[in-house]
Image (cartoon, rainbow, N blue to C red; front, side):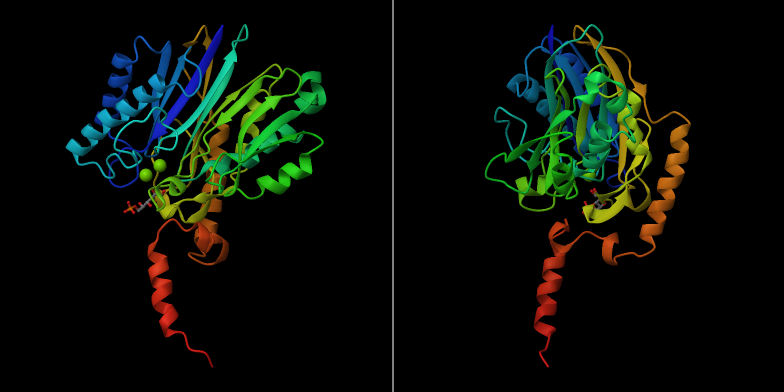
Length: 365
Ligand code: F6R
Ligand code: MG
Ligand code: MG
């Protein structure tokens, strides 16, 4: 059977700042999807990471389906009403349009979707991140799908050994979707040359060369390109099918032990280490650190199992300690050098005014 997995997420308001949604807000979104999605969806799961609520759904409507997108949009609108009533901070923040226009992409919320023929057993992982942007997944995806240091399947499994096709998007290009397909292992160095620049190039999807099957789907939107100003970081979502001709679940999870530095953190304008967290976690230190949670499911005839919380296992406590240390170490140098993003990536416009004012005070000697 052909099934579609859709994950759509938005920040529509949170407690005490950009920390986490209220219980009532979560309840509103959950109830809306359960009631209004009854006919349309086969199954769904609603959760949050930091201040972002995600709706995972399974259905047979295909990707970019206007009804599925509209359901999510309306669920976020219903949530926004609750957020406003409760006086939550940033109510409706990511809903950048006044009315729904057929596809939720480009309207604020992040979307990742994939349609595929279900295998006899169909395991997959859902990653949801907060206080960062889509390029945060570049390094983990590169390592999981092309480096035997994290994926021994590349030397042990004939299916994996044939490599993968990465579709990479130039997200700074706003006229259209500008993409390139690169095949591993031949294009490995070309891939690295692009993926080192997380703010410009983002892995949109990966396909297994042995089976032609799609392994991953990621959200690629950059909000400030849509709104033309800072309206929050993009907080990306990612779906990854596992096992068989795809990497094993543990090979996908392995690179998250690094806690690599990503863009985001306080005011979306700093670098911070990517912390793997348990499900429904809040942000804290310096509005962060940038965080990622991962839920593992199986899907059969569109029915989802309960999730396993992949970063809850005790191993990740050690990683969280390490990442905390990395966060504090970089924070010790405050605004200096690599602690903050370059001028072009700063998410707040205020710096432009400061620079303009200073301009007048400069003298040539
Ligand atoms: C970063 C983020 C927060 C806010 C910060 C200030 O993505 O969401 O760090 O930027 O809390 O928020 P505002 O500008 O809404 O007062
Ligand atoms: Mg926010
Ligand atoms: Mg967020």
